[in-house]
Image (cartoon, rainbow, N blue to C red; front, side, top):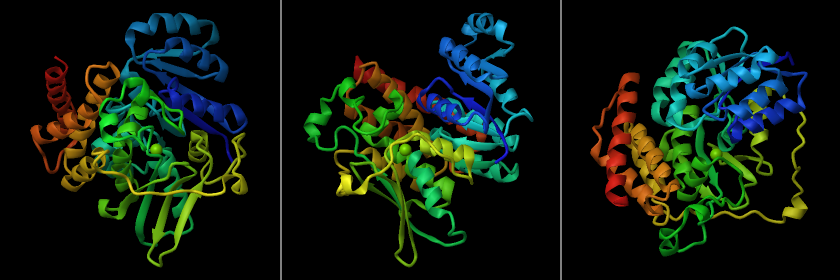
Length: 388
Ligand code: MG
């Protein structure tokens, strides 16, 4: 395998740090060209020094001074602001762009990388939720590859290898069920921020951990799968699998089901996106089936987790509706993390925002940005009412 030059957008977050751990294990195969962070400038500086990055961007322009000062002796070029990310990501010195920023804010730079025909290792699922059709059309037009980093979608992608052209009968997306799987609806209604942040299987950032507790994460993943694999929503099923060993499954027309397995470790999916189609060693925990004994599965409880139906509904309506849902969810999760609203207020805000913001059937990119702003503001008005 030829050496690959990598840009990590969002290198100080959970996925970004795990990606650097993958690179740490294969310094001969991967090279860090660009690192970007929102505001964690001190960690960004450490990473740039350790991995000898050529360029870094600190998005928060107020932190530019400290970052540039700290990296001056190390000959790392320092830039600030989202526009710099969008410019630098198009550089000829980059082969793979890992999009591991959080939320809708990742859309602009992902589109810049897609337009430059880069190989995208996609960890920012909100990009495909908000603008799936637009991003996939641009990727086809500019010959940009999109490799999933979300563990379920990496699993599906791996289950599809060797079956080119075969129709997918069904995608079975597995879900851990999150921390509230066995809680009653009344108890979930009173859940605190700390309880919701306590995910049983996966160690992740705070936004996605709350999304896992509401199961909106699975809802976003249904929409992400629809765009990555071209599979309509009624062929994407969610099954609760508390052990998180099977990362997802593909069922073919003959009834044969292919599953991808492993202990929950995001680095496997990240590494496979970096090394595709090759497989490299990784210091991950290996499966011992005799020790596992059994795996269990059950249907999700849609009354306890209304986010799933909201996502299916957003996908069914299409247009800018998934973007509205995503924006409302981002606003509501942020408010929940600040302890301004309760747990079920998150999905209530999403539902009401989906009813209020203007629906557009065939949005262009400008409309998607406008929708995101409108939905955020509608959701925040609802949140203000609840938290008062
Ligand atoms: Mg996932």
